Image (cartoon, rainbow, N blue to C red; front, side, top):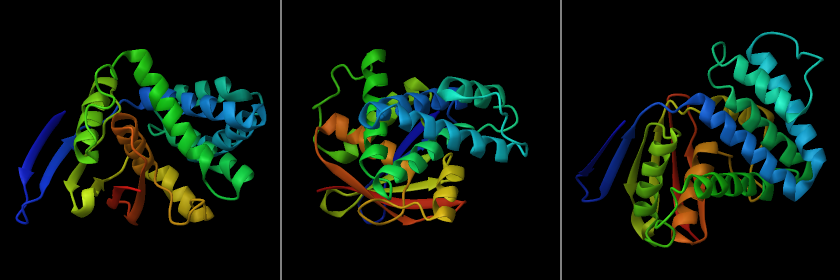
Amino acid sequence: MQEGEHILPNGKNEFVIEGEPDNQTILLVAKTAAEETAKLYGSSFISMVSEYALHFEAEKLKEKPPQNIQGLDQVTNYILQNLNRYPRGYCALLYGIAKADIKFWGSTGAGARRAAYSAMKSILESSGLLKGTIGKTKDPFEAIRMNEKINQELGTASSASYIRGENNQVITVVPNCIYIDACTAFEKEGISRLIGGSECVFLIVTTVGAEIITEKHLDYKLDKFDASECRGRIYEF
């Protein structure tokens, strides 16, 4: 994976990440996210995530959901065993989390955000990669740069470019997003954010990473959703 930085004609900074993440690692991160969110909602949340994820995965594999598979562990193993057939199987769990979140809020809200934040912080703390990072910068742009270096270490970084915008905003450009299958399902089923606007897995995890490092409250907005390229922005509030 290579990272490059240059100055745009308008004088703004941009850095680019190029790479392909490890699908198995992202799947396990998604599983951790579901488990962390269940601490907020209870065991019924895990049951719903498992059911929705199982049906999503089976549909992608063009087969009926196996009746002998139940619970998050078994569903995750089912997805894991079929990564050769559907490499982006982690999208099944991410879809399951969002779908279950709707049952509690009517749209994706506290659960989706809590899932990403708790899972990421738990994984980063156990890996030791956060040491000396939290609070090191209050600049979201620099925090995202630091977060991407951590993602490289974890094997969860994917191709994207980040531009320093006005008022400390960070503009994101994501070509061929690895989460497109989950987000396409969100769009198709009308799964939206509690505060309004489209949901975006990439922006959630990127925003949360910057929040952990800056210790600031950040949010995001998806400006363009497209299979070939998505655009959004992360900002302070």
